[in-house]
Length: 247
Image (tube, rainbow, N blue to C red; front, side, top):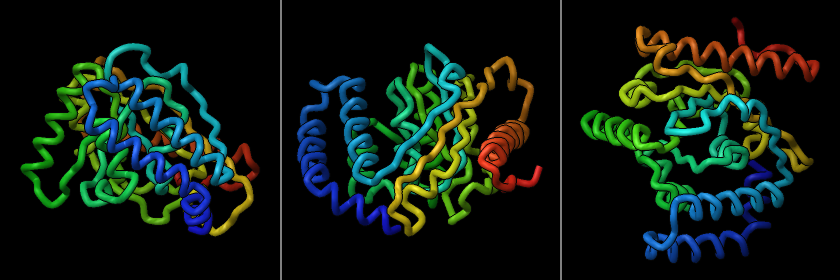
């Protein structure tokens, strides 16, 4: 957490600018196409990474669909996960976020600016409505990030159980499902070191509707989880470390 607080302190002038500019954009949203709003968020992410001495290496961008909407399903390690993906993802994307977490400063503005989805985990009817909304938006070309672990619990590079229901929006939209393996993302804001660190984002080969149309959500969930675990293990072994996920 030390780096997180240091990044906040060093970034105070940028945070003030971000808050003021965000409120202006939200009051005049019609004048700012999604591409411009996404570019604004990415500039803030890049500045945050610079101030926090964080570098992210991205791999597999050739696997991302070139057209249309799709849903990315990453493992979840901490506060930096969404930022690492948006830093490396060229086309505008947004996120499905727990409603409570989404109301935190900075996260609140990010979700609003990028027209993200807030998920009320205590209200099943509201969740169903949110899934349908995300599904329709993906059909119309939007790109979403959904964390199928549902949260992060200081798990580092160990992948936790995936919630099959997280895949329903993509299945309803019949959209590509893109597994995303995050490696060392927890190191950005989750450990007390200040030296420069590097995180990794791996975009894996997508599942298209033709690939999963006969699969149940649990089968899709298990497949995506396994692919992510294999990529994380491969990356850690390449660094001379033990594979963290038993396969």
